[in-house]
Image (cartoon, rainbow, N blue to C red; front, top):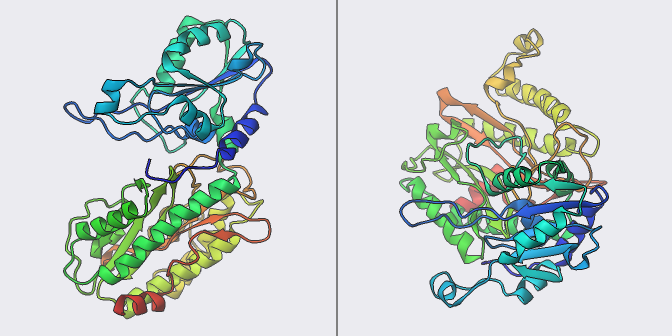
Length: 429
């Protein structure tokens, strides 16, 4: 891992909180992610299962965590099973956790080799009344790939069909949506790395550079500062491409007079950041570009003030929509009379702002959480309004990451240039 060691207290506290939600005499099992095949004999680099990492800090393939507070087998109340290394693995794959390293990382005393897991599971299944199985229930996730947790659940249910099986996912969504102070520090580190990359770009971008060169500059700064890399594939969208929400080609020359939409974020210790800024390739916005930019920024500032405890994301988005309507009228994209007579089920602002304003963020860039429940103190969100005008070749989105606070929010990106005048000054320096 490139990142610095994480205080194991984070994972100790996370497991304690998880145990509070378990039934009596219940066993919970969490698996690491698969090493996914790429081509030939290659696999993709491991991205650890976020739930396993949240509960253990273990960042290695072929790892299993069990939590069973009520078992009379004390050494299995909290136990971690990891891959045993050998001379061949050490030569071909490099270092793997020793038991002592896994103990220090996770705060779990009982560490076993993976080959000990089947016997331990058999013994525990004969004692427990219910089993909490993990699955990916992120409402943005849809895949035909039968990942490790699903395969494990199917095999276990076939072998022990009469047990009472329950879902860990709702518990994990509730726990992970409220950030521990150590998590906030890690997210701030990810945002600081992202800031450094953005500031680097402000001195690099000029007419004639290719979007892929900009992407390379971002990755250079990320790796230099010990990030794992991108938290998601970056969007480097110049000119008309700035109106394509998930543009990922990143292969066009940036032309004088173009607007350039940059949406990227560093992953640090598996925690995501998510930044968007829209800047002028030439170093100076055209009057119309600045007008649209400032309108978007005004909506963003109001939206950040609305993202407070008690409101639901649904109602929040509706309120932001009203602010956006006003902004679009001001820049003459909507007519006030048309807005007054619009079908409220299909608001006119959606033509120019078609996505949501905020999403959960944390271990995943689109993190888990209940979008229908009231927002709580300690939750983390993006705030990212945008205005997209394809016929003008202008797409503007501005985005920061926030922790919802009791009296005011913590803006994790407060030091990243955001005002149009400041961006112009830095680009022309």
